[in-house]
Length: 333
Ligand SMILES: C[S@@+](CC[C@H](N)C(=O)[O-])C[C@H]1O[C@@H](n2cnc3c(N)ncnc32)[C@H](O)[C@@H]1O
Ligand code: SF4
Ligand code: SF4
Image 1: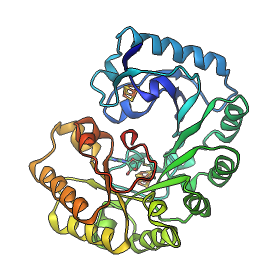
Image 2: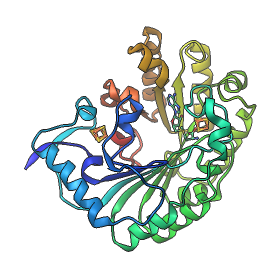
Image 3: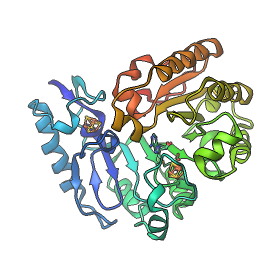
Image 4: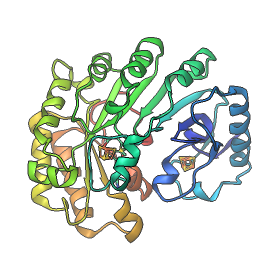
């Protein structure tokens, strides 16, 4: 039977600092998300119970009793959902530790407190899920945070996923540090890193990120790209978050696009800064024009273009551009 639901409700799980949720997309647009376990700090999970809780939530969607947090979500689709009782999408987001100071980030004002926190171990949870055959063969594991490369478990986590599962890994990283595991995954076509550069110049980068690491990030991008063919190279994404009055000007954007072209980056992502949008509830005219400008660039340069949470929420997912087929599931980012 076809009904309105989403990949996360049907086949997803999301690990946060102290809970297990269905997704964390709802939170980025200011809603309370759907919960699987309200108190979770890494303890052993009863997978049958998790499946039962998810089943109850699925039944609500099947009866068209859609929770208010999900009502306007663009990820809702009307289709026949396969009842797999497995995870096709795992979001790992259980720590806030980070070495940067991005002006837009929710970690900004609580850096010291967050950096003192010791996250629970997620690898045993994942190993247990694999042991209990909870992952689909084409599972997506999205590692976000905090900064993945400051997570002590990151190398072991990547090693396990790459060597012991068939999952594809999405990693959101500041790109200031280099990971041999990201490189290994890229070589195998199994890992897709997204680096939010948000600037085309060193000065603006420093203003946004709080550190003078612009060149360091670019060098790491080059190291990741070295030796990859076009398809694998297109797994590396460079992102630009439009931050009103900081980087929403054509000169900065043009410098970023020049860099994209010089580096040969073939996957770009756009977003509008969340706090600003949630307060103002509109996309300024100049940013709308810049998005059109990037679309024209994408068609000329023939790369892939997608959008993140809030731009997806207001419908830009329909404008994704896709020149290189690399197997990424474009609608889910
Ligand atoms: C919190 S960060 C953690 C991952 C990693 N440290 C990074 O910077 O990519 C997760 C993602 O959210 C994005 N992000 C953080 N704060 C944001 C904001 N206020 N508006 C839009 N995107 C934001 C980051 O660019 C990143 O892609
Ligand atoms: S907020 Fe959207 S993605 Fe998250 S569970 Fe609801 S419909 Fe699915
Ligand atoms: S690098 Fe990521 S987690 Fe760290 S401050 Fe920037 S956006 Fe936040």
